[in-house]
Length: 348
Ligand SMILES: [Zn+2]
Image (cartoon, rainbow, N blue to C red; front, top):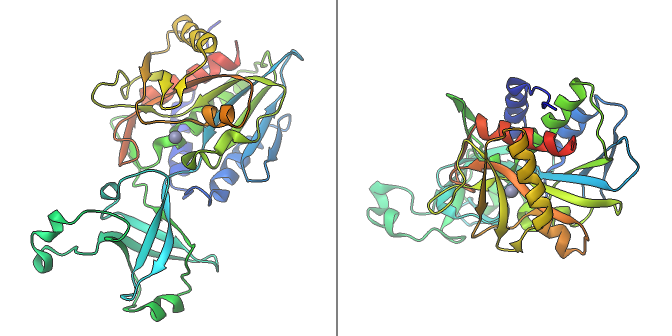
């Protein structure tokens, strides 16, 4: 069979909308809501939330045999206010794993308890070359040397507190979404590119009027960046789980921005051999451009479910993302290949 056609422009529009919806880990309600709204166009799907806020979608299948699941995460890197400093600026604590230099100079939004926001910038505490000279270069970037300069009149702790900012407020980094020559440049393509791929794989199947052979769960995870996203929310009938997450591009890697990758091993060890081989077979059968790779510093939601005791086969696929957990970039070809691979699996 040939795979249904994918509306790539529609998928890109949705991806841009999702990227522009802030969702640092722990503060993902709006992004989950956006996915929920998208999926509610098909009344035959049953949508539910786990207690910790992930979205679980059941797509009924033709057979009543074992169920399948695919998971992708909407939560992203971000930060939380750790302390209001005596100069009125904010000290942050990281959400997820990244280096401070990758967000230096980035615009941020601080989410206050009253639902309003304050804008600002992440800067080194010795930011000005005219004041600090060589120290701007030499200072190590860490939790103590980075701060948020707020776009508000404040020079001390009291004045910042009076703005309604508190310890524990979430802070989101500007994604800076740009699409040029079919390249998508943005923060948080990990893993929003995969959420868009997964939702549009389903849309393409629905638009083509096709039914899924097996009952399939789509799990939109909201705590992946801190390691326990898909540890809950995968129903017990599921025997196979495809983790859909970005592929690591760089020196020594086979992955690139024009293919989807099957990851066979990462920091958590090897993925399931049988399911991985089936995914390769499906890619070859449908002429989906793919690579096979190993990621040296990486963990996935599939492994989170394994660690939580999930007894399922797990495989990991996703688009190549350059400069991951930094200012990321991929190409439409990789996102398209990922969506097609999800389709091929769901229809197999
Ligand atoms: Zn990810």
